[in-house]
Image (spheres, rainbow, N blue to C red):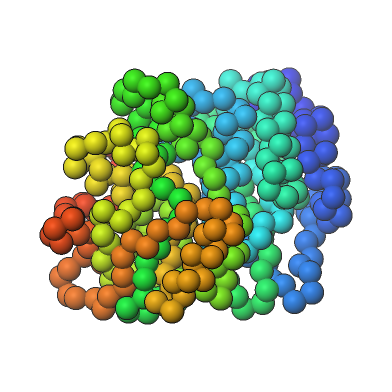
Length: 337
Ligand code: ADP
Ligand code: MG
């Protein structure tokens, strides 16, 4: 944070108003906040930090960073079937960040709060010689004992995914200058899918009692379905042709089969991958139309076979395609953004 900015002034001028409506936030004037779930409900808690140069290019503006920071967290809560309620915010700011930046960041958070019905509970603000880092802890609510875990899948169940897969990966490539997309509308669509994920905040809660297991797609469809497989002690088969691509993504990858497969491992989709028994097919169609989010059946859960990968992707002729390890992994130099 630039020298001369007082942390407490900053909290008063930018953040205190974002806490109104949550009595336990105590106007951001105490050491801690309290949060009481409604009767019969329990809290679902998650945290996601985003780091400049790792999770987003350091050229993107504060309003977009704020959206992304909150939405990646909303996505975790949605994937568990919970409704988001409140969050804390830890800001780790380099010298280059001044008051204008923080004001724009906080204004954008205010818009997001109104859209998603969440309130700021508290946080921390500190400077760093390192990169800009934003950590959000989010608190959602759900009826007791109904959080959708990763471990509830059974063999023979269907695998589904919401929305479309791969747009964000293409959008990031466009933002980084690694991919050229001629059409301006297509370019804007892809960039927007990276910068402003659409956390499935109504679809997720509608899946409670219907989905047997779920995960949010942040590391890539193959990796996140792999998490469900590991937790459920199963494997999965995915039909490449059934994986939903937006019209723009389809037009962009055309016949480039390797690029098309990469969309399944690219990550940053913030969709929900989930499993459900065959008997739930009609309910899932209804949830899709009622929440106005596409839901595609993309495969099936199977027993594990030793030596085979957890997630097998089959092409149109039923042959397995090479998808690599799958998913964005940290601590691998070549993945640094
Ligand atoms: P501590 O001294 O324990 O670090 P602070 O004095 O930093 O606590 O925080 C004072 C109050 O301001 C607390 O209520 C804290 O939750 C709030 N706060 C600090 N930074 C932020 C932030 N970035 N967003 C929201 N609340 C914040
Ligand atoms: Mg502090």
